[in-house]
Image 1 (cartoon, protein in one colour):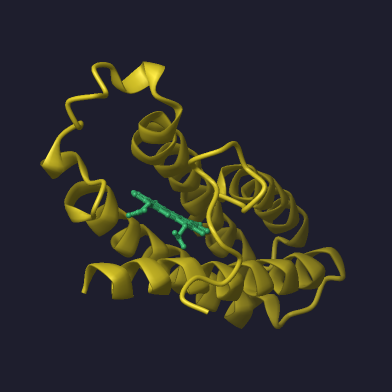
Image 2 (image 1 turned 180 degrees about the vertical axis):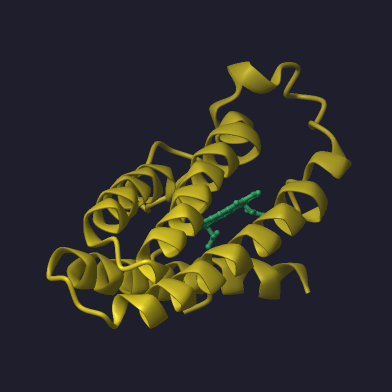
Length: 145
Ligand code: HEM
């Protein structure tokens, strides 16, 4: 279950990124189809949030397991600081922005939708544990493959 959730969380990132790029394109080219793409994007983002919450509390490095003995301080350990603080917080901001953008997209307010989505994209690109990230926190492009 734990590995399944982790792989799902990781693979869903690609779905979310494709939907986000599509919605961005539709916002800046003023396509009415932004109404439906922004809805799917919001659903994907909220699914990520739920799976992420599970992982950050009950996952293999979850808060409920506590810090291992060799890690006395959370903020001095880049791995735990990334997965307990930086990644969840930055992604949460991105998900809030995507949710606000959905509201703007429903009203066909293309400009505001576009800007909100662009900022959300930057947050997500910064917070994803790309394989080239610092030693420890980086993860595979396609896990399990
Ligand atoms: C747009 C939203 C998000 C994206 C794109 C995203 C992406 C990712 C990716 C690619 C991984 C690496 C998975 C792997 O090892 O293969 C990951 C891990 C993780 N994510 Fe997220 N995430 C998002 C939101 C969140 C949120 C909101 C939380 C917490 C509330 C969260 C908590 C975690 C945790 C704890 C891990 C590490 C799990 C482990 O190694 O056991 N994520 N995330």
